[in-house]
Length: 437
Image (tube, rainbow, N blue to C red; front, side):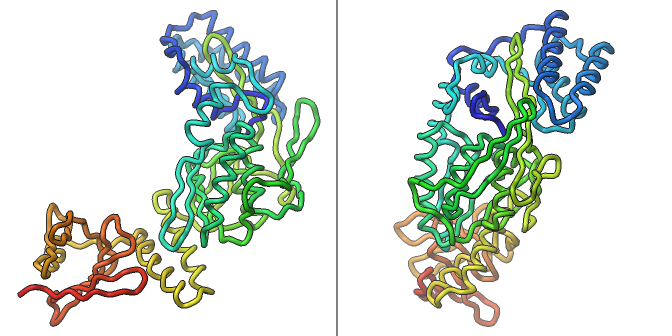
């Protein structure tokens, strides 16, 4: 997690995309530059790193430098070696060193206390403040994928309010932070406040090891969008979920906001600052630690474990199955049928039905004005005058029409032979179609 007054690591990545000047060529480092960069890194650690024995960290770096470990002229290789050593020595995921010419230049730009640097603000606007995808899944599950807890002040708050309005119309919510590496605590505060009552509770206390001071974030009382309490929430996490994204996962766990689905997160909790180091490097240094009011600790080195374990590629389908199953339990008959329809497709993603060419070929044939045939191992469906549509098996004799979540093909058999199909719809309608002689 990174304080608002300094350049954020997510902002650095964004700045790379927007810097007008081309990246500096990888000019070989001179021995003097190598030594100066390591010396500056050591001094910054001695001044700022307070969560471990900083003297031991500096002493180990100096020992390795004296042994010639950093006598590397290639700047990218030099930075990677030093970064690997920092992580190894401290076991701290926020301690890193990077070769980043564009990020280095961005770090030297003036920074606003609340909005960061102008390059980052522009990048955040282009990717919708990190909220990059919103979809309505079958069963009216509202899905949002966001890749970074970015913060530009009012512009970010406005986007989060729009996201809340989208989510408010859902029967259940899936928030995907499986690829979210973190960002700003203000962005976490702004989002998580929508899932809590306006009771002003402490969200997180931040301890600054340099000054000895603490500050805390609280649930926001006034929000521009609707609160989302009472809507079933599922949060997708993975080993690539880090830092501020792990804070959101921690709130989900300890404030009982919803269900975590996926795999254990990265385990990077400490607060960090990012410093420019000549001639074109960036160094991240942990200076403090967050403490959650419920657990009395944080997720450093241990991560946040899921409630439902699922590999990343299947996490969304797993969450859909859990959400739809939960919704069906108390739904009225009509709504329950809609959830059951959606559940079939979600379960098929988890356990796909694989049919060989012979099994698929049994469905091929003419069905009045409709034709079904096998092409390149895929079953295709077409009605006269319309485009062909691939058919995907969901269950024995049941197929989904690609791109159409509201219609399916349910084949009928007699004596083991396919004799027709019913074109079924999500609302229960059924159109029988017989196979042509």
